[in-house]
Length: 132
Image (cartoon, one colour):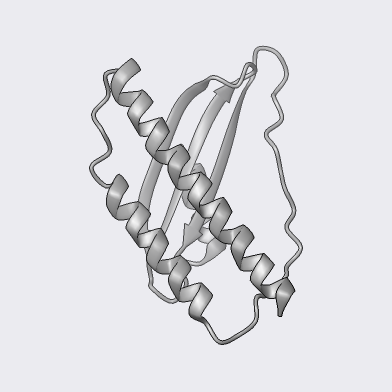
């Protein structure tokens, strides 16, 4: 039982750090880049808090899955690279996709995203490729 509590304490700590970072990033965008504050930031943080509470109160034990981390690799000089991805909210029918084109230095050349409705994961990746 101690291991499970340690697991959830680590999740809460990570969640808190992530949200403080989001708020700090939004603040810096407003001050230094003169960008408007994200009006949805508070609701996004609240939504994540509710999701976290739901997960913590779930009667099932946490599942430990192997997580594989991938990183961006720069294309050859003079080339650009297109990366796409898609995601869905489990059992909600909410899906979306997006893509980003970057040069050999990692600078974003173009970015695109779109909510697509209800599609399969493979279709999401193709949708992101089509958009970009």
